Amino acid sequence: MKIKSISALEAKKWYEIANTFARSFISQSEAIHQFNQITKDDRLKIRQAFSEYDSIRRKMLPIDQAEEEMKDAYYTSVLVDCHIIATEFSIDPVVATMCLTPPCSPNEKVLVKTR
Amino acid sequence: MKNLLTGNGINCQFDKESYTSKQLVLRILKNCADADFPTNIIVDQPYLLKNYLGKLFLFSREIIRGEYDQYAFGSAEKESLASFKERYRSNLRLLKMTDICFEDYFLIHDLVCHKNKINNPDQYIIREAMRTAYLYAIYNKGRINELYLQYPEHFIRYLKSFDNIFTTNYDLNIENAIQNSVIHLHGQFNVFSDVYDANSLRNLLPDAPIRSAEIDPAFYYLYSNAITTHSGGYKEFIIKQSSTANKCVEGFASAYKTNTGIKEQVDSWIHSSNTLLVNFGYAVIIKARNPNAQFAERYEFDKFKHMLGDLDILGISPWNDFHLFDAINKSKISRCTYYYYDESNCLQVQKLLPHLYESGRLCFQSARKIWENIIDEN
Image (cartoon, rainbow over all chains, first blue to last red; front, top):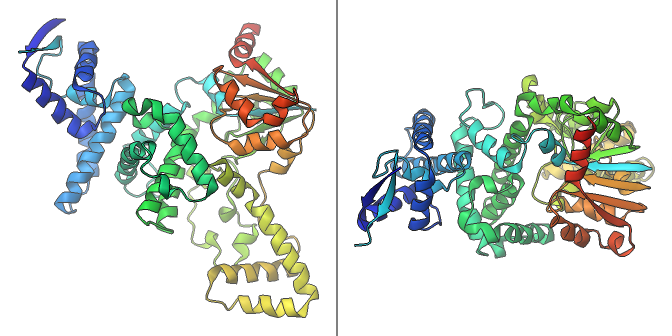
């Protein structure tokens, strides 16, 4: 796989946004290390799985609730989907979420620049 | 006499993809998106269940850290909580929803309810939704009852060699394989629970639950007497509930027929504002008139407690169902062989069966070897 260098700030943003949903306890460096082990095919399958769950979620979540309740239901639903996908691919939930909007192509590994 | 106690380990042996604890939790979560999810039975909006389990997972991490210790009420809950923390503490950082056994989610639910002062009926209704979702996942659209078709002949001969087979499984694989009865200590899919049994004393009472129940025959197993909860103590309570109630009602019914004072007292109960007292009054009166009326007793736990001879334990985890180990430890069996999959379980079994261990009646054999032999023989 090719290497894509990203800044420390980019890496932090990528991890933290993903973890808003996944609520994982693993560190950013652990998560990126795990991400880099995932094959291109699996990354695409993970994105596809999230997309399918998202379609189901749009049909299942009611739209007549208050905004705060809707937001909470949405985030919790995504959290559960993270765990489902993480189990199926034997990865951490935050790593599953990081596959959604990675700062690299599916066939690239990420290297965080130290300076 | 030769006795066998089996559990889910046997099912996992014949289907390594579908019945592990992880797979069951995964299936429960994924079932919530199924088009044919029984919304008429479990919950009308499956996302509620899915999201609730997600929330429980988040609370589980606080529980493991000890933040809910003061919300465990009673010895059974405290024991379950201690075991829960011990089992998951070392893996807290990497814990996923599917790493937690589904029966442990009942404990998390109860603790969260205690903390947030959520009582019955809400606590009960949610627990029932969780329970039926679990049974739905285990039943796996009927596939669970087909596992026996894979049983090798040698394994069937092994099963037939026992005088009594006890199981914690709800499926009928063993009886289908050996064409003989098996004692289901925690209930079975094809037996209705007491509240759905038209012949039970429960449904002869004025508020008979069966009158308002709409049983969907396609999902008969969701109305079964299958027991599932986090605590062996609670399971034993449920197991004994009917027989305890029957003894109590029988005693009162006998007195009702012979003692005027008791009769007047019981007759007054049916006019009470307390539903439990009304029901008890009616149960006594009905029993006095019809001695055959009783709450259905289906678990045959007494037979398990009083077994004699040798006992083999195959496919049972020593990390839950402590009531079974307690009964074995107090029994008069001559010898117990525990078949372990993971050698580290042996120490736990020794702790659970101290009388047997100290008297030299407990031994261990590798389950892997027994399965290898069974497969090799065929």
